[in-house]
Structures are given as structure tokens and as C-alpha cells.
Length: 252
Image (cartoon, rainbow, N blue to C red):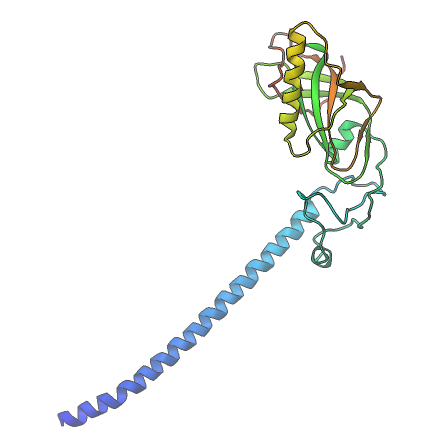
């Protein structure tokens, strides 16, 4: 009796192992299919998010008929690939080369359309040549900006005064390093001019007079600004004080 039971158990054991193995293999296939489905869902969500961000992002020079999308760009920008065009990751802009110049506009308009970045900074003077400004184009198009700025600049430190930037009076006559941060460009040159002013001199001879602000594609420049302090009870902005443009207008 015992021998028969042992034989039956021994025969049943491989069958049970085979059934367990089949169940485990089936579970493995289901798990692999589930992982694959989750991966496809995540990829689809990522693509949808990219399309939504691209559609929501403001296009440079929106509303202008002659805007364009470059087929090539500096190394810091990703070129537009056929994959991006096929999947509509870039919308409403036709590629063109070279980019046509945009119509003349004010600095305020260029900032509103995300065509330029600017970083103004002080130089220890309360009026006159009282501010410098690093400006850099964000598009491939040539820009022609009105030198009359007429914008309030908000200081980065509360102890200092806000400034009214009146007009761009001069342009630095040497090449500006395009790889250097705008704030570093502005404060570095402003410190040199501030030292000259403290020594009883005027600004250096490196500034040539201008009647317009002209920027080539992705071009950085440094401007000398006629500006005036707005809160005389606070400190005069020095070269290490930077500013951000304000949307509000101010009339002296």
C-alpha cells in the first residue's frame, strides 16, 4: 500500500511541475505585455505633452507675415528635423534660408514677441549715461529696433533705485562674446566705465553713436543707455546691480 502511494506521488510530481511551469510562463508573457502597454502609453503621453507645449509656446514674431523658421541654427539650438515636421512638433512656420529681416519695431514690442533678451545694469550715475544694457537676438531674422526705449527698469536689489531707460545712445565698438552670459557682459563692461567715472573721466571711447539698434540673427550687443533714477531716497545703482524690464509705462 505504501509503495503504491509513493509511486503515484512520484508520477504526479513531474505533472505538477509542468503545470506550474506553464502557469509561470503564461504569467511572464502577461507581465511582458503589460510592461509593453505601459511603455507605449508613456511614449504617447510624452508626444502629446510635447505637441501641447509647442502649440502653447509663443512663436517669435507672431502675426508677422515674413517670419520664418531656420533650417540650420547655432550649436546651442536643435535644428528642425524631418521627424519634427512629420509629427507636427513645429507648427505654422515654414522653413526658409536665409531669414528675411523683420520690420522696424520698438524694444518693448521685440520683448513682447520674445525676439530678444536684455539685461540692463547700472554704473554708479543717477542720470545721463547712467545705464548699460546687454541685448541679444533670439531669432535668425535681422532686427531693426527703435533706439527710444522709454521703459521702467526694476532693480535686482531693493536698496537701489529703479531706472527709467530713455534712449540707447551708443553701441560698443568691439565684438561681444556670444557664449558669455548677458548679465556678465553688462556688469563687466559697466564696472570698467564706473571706474573711469569715479576717476573724474567720462565714458570710454569705445562707444559709437547710433540712431537705431540693429541685431543680426542670434547677435549679442552692448548698448550705452541714457537713463534716470526714479527714487532719489534710495542708493544709486552700481555696476553690479542688474535690472528687469517692467511692463508699466512712466512719463517724466
